[in-house]
Image (tube, rainbow, N blue to C red; front, top):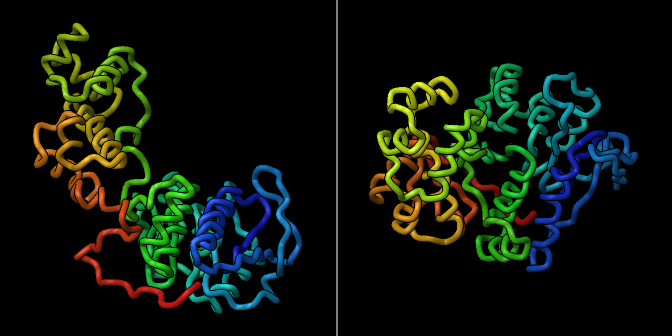
Length: 329
């Protein structure tokens, strides 16, 4: 396995996936990591640490898998042609290639994402789509697989992608052992939102709205109807609705639902059943929770919870199945 490194790359984009593959070795998997730089010289990471290289891209051997990390300077700035050439050379002889976070900009600049589905950090998905119109950017995915090309979202999503690659190679049982050993989720489903739905916008600034947020989070199953919320904060229902529209561009009831939705996800993550998650997070029924999950994530609560037994995202019936990558990496 080759990891293409370069100056100012994100350290966690390299160390996170590398730890997954290294840990997999403790459970019987065989991954040999090779650090590759353009020239074979050491590079300096975003936190100032120097990383030595094992080989130069020009002389590196073929790899079953090539990983390309991201860096803060990649979006919106010209990418070194030598770096894109190195990525292209490594990809041409690789069984599969994967980018972490903004590493997708390197793959795109190298022409490796033409007509492919891809993702990157949510802050840069719009720029990626605008800069490379032939890409089909999926802005709300943890990782995307298109044939033998993989792209992932921001930073820690590289760990999710690494676990998914390990499962392709060695199955869910070994991968579950790796995830437990590293104390991480088996994997956040590939099509899952990159961030909490109720955190997609800024936190409320108005004291009244912050108070409502605190009240709902403290007791999600309580009566949080519009009239009851307005009564608690001593404003009229109409005025409260205007406040939500003005500051958060939503309604009080939709905001309450988002908070309950986040809590239900956390409960499912902790091992609760879908029915328990619905009750404890304040949804009136499982069916209500199911509709909310379908609207926000496109999967049922049960399918979402299934992520603890497999790293594979649910198959989207509207898309053709993509071939698995055979063999051991």
